Length: 162
Image (cartoon, rainbow, N blue to C red; front, side, top):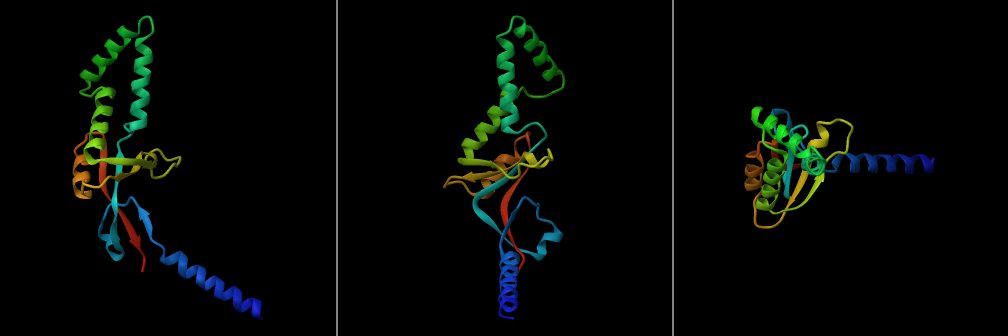
């Protein structure tokens, strides 16, 4: 009997802890999220890059283009590749990566961590950017949202269910 009572108390305590813990999420604020108590995590912004435009993906493209240049006909291939970018009104990967790095420097990004390392490609484009002191969350959101490589940027809200 004592074991059953202690197990029940343990189960109740675990349930209370599990449901009262804050959850960080990259969820745009909508009417459905207004039922939760929210507050932004200090000095953190969520940034979702467009498909294939994460800093890591762009760095791979830049490295591939550098390697291509060292090949025998690499310069000619790069010339045609550059023309293809211009004809499609797209920026070169080097320019895109430079814009992102400049934005990171402007907001004082200390650390950039992928939010989810999931199999879904859309979720792998979401990063938590930790800001250094001096820039506000609102300023950082404006800087990132101004980038054509970014789908959206928002404060890293912490949701409390109770």
